[in-house]
Image (tube, rainbow, N blue to C red; front, top):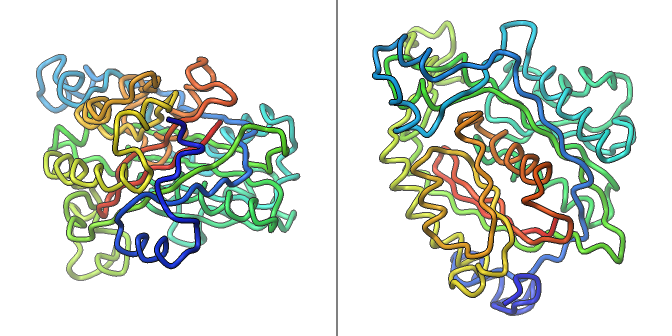
Length: 361
């Protein structure tokens, strides 16, 4: 069964299709967006942190992080010298080089990050300036959907390319989680790492196999407190009378997040037309969000026979929105993802949301 041709739903735009989309039942129609990923890049901070360093710091037994979080190493950015926009620019330059283009030739720059370098301005202009394009006028903006920001930005940019509004886009996720880690919470302080990844998107040639097929989102806002960082916004501003130091630290209920994420998976699979083993067998790769060891194990248990599962968690930790493009970049670089192969970007994010996007690389 080929995900590119399977008909699980009425023609896109029909009344039945629209009603089904509203209710969240049944598979969506194939979008068939003629968009290709022309180049991918990454940047990992120079400081590589062994899990033993954290375990010793917080009084955990050696090996606890690998066993419980699935992380042996992660990279943490150096303050001031490795800013998020600078890291993102390094990944973007590599992506542009691999795509064979100059950064100034893109029509759109999207900062797709769950953590922000500043409250104002958004990371788009900061990234544009860091790329040496501060006078270019290229539209630059941010998309923030926590760990799913890259997928959200990919959808936004790809749709604009498909409809002819732009020809080429640069999507960049750059995350510095290390500044908000709670070292009193072992599952938080051992899990997260810093890093950046970028993708150049462009219109695919008529004879190119590259396409974006289906996208499924599901959000259950009742889970907003499961994974949260309360400070920094208007509710707990830095100088607010009710703000406490703990508001600046990331809070996570790991088991609750895992349970909630598992409940989202069947809905996302159904909307993608992947709720049976035969359909999933058509996929050749899976680039998931590296949420945790347990979360990756759950994805493998779904059953993607014949698909290469790209794992970066052990060597980079959970890099928030950069996790999915880091997995995508590694998969391409190491040959797990080849041109013409169909696969899926899959994950969950704070809120709580689940997403799946099928594409032919």
